[in-house]
Length: 362
Image (tube, rainbow, N blue to C red; front, side, top):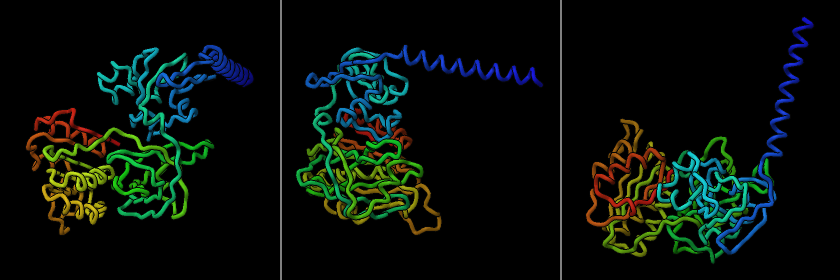
C-alpha cells in the first residue's frame, strides 16, 4: 500500500511540474509587446499584450461588428489585414470568399496580434460612436420573439437592411459585450428604432433584452451593414425570410413602398405554424402600398386540421414552386443557414447574378 501511495504521489508531482513548465514556457515564449497597430493609415496605437484583434479594437473604441461574441460563427467582424499577410484559419474560410481571402480579409476575432499590424476597417466602423436608447415598449409578438421599440436621437439615420450593436451587460466583465440586431424600422421615421429579438435560452443577449421594460436605457452603436435597396423600378426585388430574418426585410419593404412603389416585389416568409407569423398587420399594409408585388407565407409545421390555406412546407419550396424572375432582380435572404443554402441552387437555376444576391445567415 505504501509503495502504491508513493508512486501515486510521484506521478501527481510530475504532472504538476509538467503543467507548471508548460505555463512558464507559454509565458516566456508567447510574443509580448509593445506592438504597433495602424488603422486606416490614420490612427496608430501601441499595444502591450498579445490578444485577439477584436478585443484590442474594442478596447480602443473601434466597435467592430459581432453577434457571436468572438466565436467565429457570425462572420461579421471582417477587417482587411494589409501587413503582415497571414493565412486564414479554417473557421474564416466558411465566411470569406476566395477573392476576399486573396485581398487580405480576415475575421478580427480570429487574428492574434503578435507583431506590428496594419489594417483597414470600413469608415463607418471607425466613425461609430456609442449612443443611448430608451425602451418605449417590449411586446411578445410570437413564441420566443419580442418586438423591442426604442427611442433614439433624432439625428440617428440608417439604410434599410442595416443593423446596430447593443451593449449587453456581462456578469464576467464590467465593460459588457456587444450583440448585433437588424433594424426593422421605417428608415424615413426619425427617433425610433425597432428590433425583433428571438429568445435563446442560456444566451447572453436575448434573455436580457426580453427582460427590458419601458424607461430602461440601453447603449448601442451603428448603423452597420452594406445592404442597399436599388430604387430602380425596372429591377425586381425578391425577399425571403425565416423567423426573425423578417426583421431587415420589413425595413426594406418600408423603403420600397416609399421610394419605388411600382417595383415588382416578391416577398416570401417562412415559419413553423400560424402562431409564429408576426407583424401581419404591418405586412398587409405594406403589401397594399406595393400593388406590383406579391406576398407569400409558408408554414412548415402547421397542424393538418387547421384552417390554413396558404403553402405548407419550407419557404424555399414555396419560392421554387412559384417564383420566376422577369428581368434583372435584386435578392435579399435572411434566416437560418439551411434556408439560405436551399435557396442558392434555386437562384442559380433561375440565372440570378450572384453579385445581386445579399444574404444574412444566423
